[in-house]
Length: 328
Image (cartoon, rainbow, N blue to C red):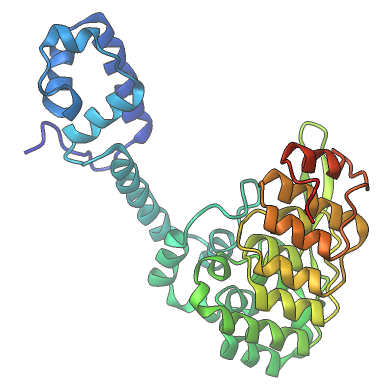
């Protein structure tokens, strides 16, 4: 039986404040606080109260106590529960489920593009199943080949039309879909859906512009190739876009495709011989960042120049730091 119950509308902000307050009280040696710690934190069960007062007690420890008092095994599980409650509430009151779905089913604009799950998107689809085929963009996000082909059969010009809350075309929605990144077992379906869009006139060089590098902002182009190769790490979709004329020499593709020790997608890009010298040295430097010797060899074997100077560091210097100058 828990000492406390989760309120009807739990508030993580308040729980975090309570945890900070518990840290303060533990450090003051207040008996009630020390007893709470002893009762709910496994590391302190066997200690006397004076020993608990003298022990190291961090915010994470206090958060665990708060969670255990509320009958949760851990703080992350409490956070998950509260977040889900709030998501359910937000889904029930959506004014525009289609736009909301597109926002949460595609990569976040102002966070890491590989962040996030499908939980919110799936909640919206459960509550509003009509969203699945409400327009070409939602069908593309889901890799719904039949749905995309049905829209294109009615009007092929939709293949290069833009819309939705982000003003993207359908292929961009597909290549920056969280479903593409997460549901890897459906890769072939996404590739066939992309092929349908390309056959109908979508461009393999489409994408979107994002403002980065605050507080001195500038624009950078986020291409569909970057979405397929650098975010989703999807080799076959990358291959398809290259075959249809996709140019990998944007600022993002070479930089981010290297962020793994699984180099299948990078291999597809290198074997296309489409990378220019700047992109190749970007790959080389980034593989040095990862200390990926096999990846560095692969880039060098495909023409990467260790003496070419990129914008931030000479590739050869990185190789020396890794002790790989004698790569052959």
